[in-house]
Image (cartoon, rainbow, N blue to C red; front, side, top):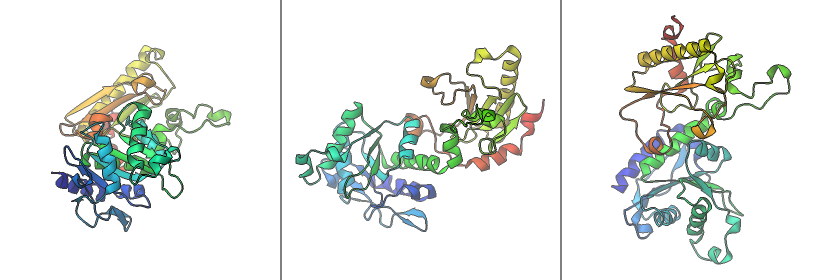
Length: 346
C-alpha cells in the first residue's frame, strides 16, 4: 500500500514543472511509513532521491523500504505525536514558501540548528528528532510544515508532512503553483507598497489599482462598468473562482447606499450565470468575508463566487480550504471572455 501510494505521489510531482524550483541542492525525497512503524526499515522512500532533468522533476528508481534514513527519522519522530502523520517530503527553503503556506492556513513551525544542544549534536541522527520535538513545542501542535534556516555546512530546508505521500505531493504542487504564479500570488496576497505620488495615494489597495486600470493589477479583470468589476481570483480555490468588486473603496456593506448595493448584487447574479455557462459546476459558494479573522485579506469589499464540484476533496481541500487548480488563469480568462456577453447584457 505504501509503495503504491508513493508511486502515485511521484507521478504527481513529475507532472509538475513548477515543482522543479522546489528541489534543493541535496535533492528531494518523499517517504511514507507503515502503520505502527518502528524503525527506518518500515519507511519507504525513493532511492537516489528526486532530481531535475531537462527542467523537470525526475525519479529514476521506484520506491523501496529503508532507503532514506534522514526523512525516515523525521516521520518516525512525527508519528510519536500523531500516528497518522506517516509521510514527509523535503524541499528547498524560501521565505516566500513559508509565507504561502501560512496564507493557506497550514500549521508552520521551525527549529534553529544553531540552538542544538551539544549532547544531541554528538549523537548520530539526533538532530532530526530534536528538531521535530522543538518544532512541536514551539507551536504546541503538530506542524504541517517544519523548516530550518541551515547552519555551517547544512543547507536550509523545509519539510512538508501529511497522512500519505499523495497528500504531501498534492500539497507541494499546490504551493509550487502559487510560488511560480508571480502575478497571481504577489498580487492577491501582497498589495503593492503605497507610492509617494499623491495621485496614487490609494494604490496600496490592489482592488483600487484594478479599478484605475493599473496594467499589472488588472490583467485578469473581465468586466468593469465603472461601478463594479468582475475579476478572476488570482489565487483561486477552484477553477473559475470569480470576485465581484465595487470600484469605490468600501470596507463595510453599510457604506454602500441602496442603489450601489442593488447594482453590486445584480453583477453577482450575472457572474453566477457566467460561471454556470463556462465552468458547469455542481454548485457555487457565494460569500463575503468581513475582517481578517473571517478570512478577508484585502480590506475592500468583494464577493467571492467559488465553483464547487462533487469530487474535489484532498489534503489541501480539507485542511487549508484551497484546491489543486488544473487550468492556468490565462486559459480560464480566455474561456470566460468568449462568453463575456453574460456580464455585459443588461
